[in-house]
Amino acid sequence: MSGLENKWQTTYHPNGINYTLRPGNYVLEIKCHPIFNTDATFYKQFFIIISPPWWQTLWFTIAAFLLGIGIIALIIQQYNHRIYQRKINALQLQQEIQHERERISRDLHDNMGAYATAIIANVDQMDENKKMKETAFIQLKSNAHEIMVNLRDTIWALNKENITLSGLTDHFKGFLQKISSSYPDIKFEVNESIKNDLILSPVQGLNIFRIMQEAFTNALKHSNGKQVIVSVSADKPFLIRITDDGTGIPEESMHMGNGIKNMYSRAKESGWFFTMNTKEDQGTEIILSSEKIL
Image (cartoon, rainbow, N blue to C red; front, side, top):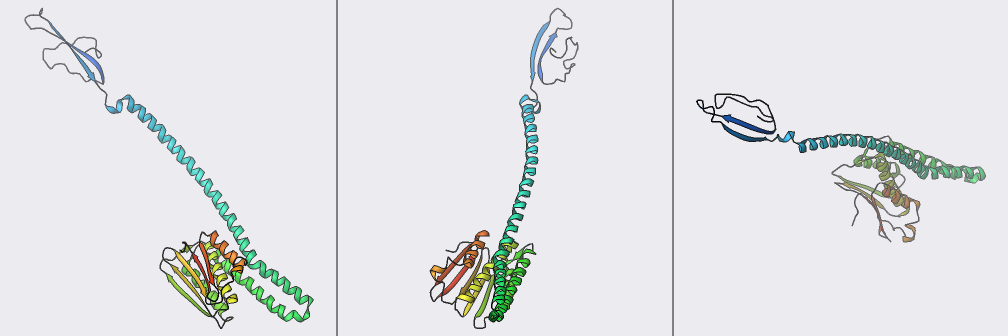
């Protein structure tokens, strides 16, 4: 067997010689002669080609090598991606914390700064004009009360990991009960239809509450109406509607008040839609929703 051995093997049986061959090229040489005539020799060659199995081929070896490199590269890429994602998450957390600090600072400034300024003015009035002491004292007491109310509302929101829309509505009802005695001639009505209770972050919850509070207070103080209706509904989108039957807001005043600007700003900050509809002698409608109202 050329390619396997260099010497001849002798056998007197047709199947007396066996080989176990590995992949490769071989030449099987056979010589034979009759028993009684050794001079009559016959010679024959057989070319044998044994192909290797597919897992021993060159292309498979190259493919396996490339696949191994690819797997190692993927593991390294995933590891680097996780490290990068952790850094991104850390930066986002820092940005959210900074944003929250700025928002709390703005909220305290907008809601309590004005009352603190008014208290200073009341004290100055009491000091300069003795006749105005009683009036200034009443205003001083009222402004101090408003500071405490706003501070409690802010702390209420920030002390919760999340706020449900139904819980927010209940908190707003508590606000209405506190101020109802100051407006005995105005009828309050709250309608709820919350099929899918919405989960809000503290920032979102406080923004909704401030918008509802500002819209409701404006209706009480400036609408000259007899009824204010608050409707809260939630299935997939949520919809909050505050309407009054007053005289409406003059068009030239709609874009001048800080209260209206703050409501727009809070809605935009949370990605919601804020709409104000008003007509003379037909009242005002404030709508806050998670989807645009057509």
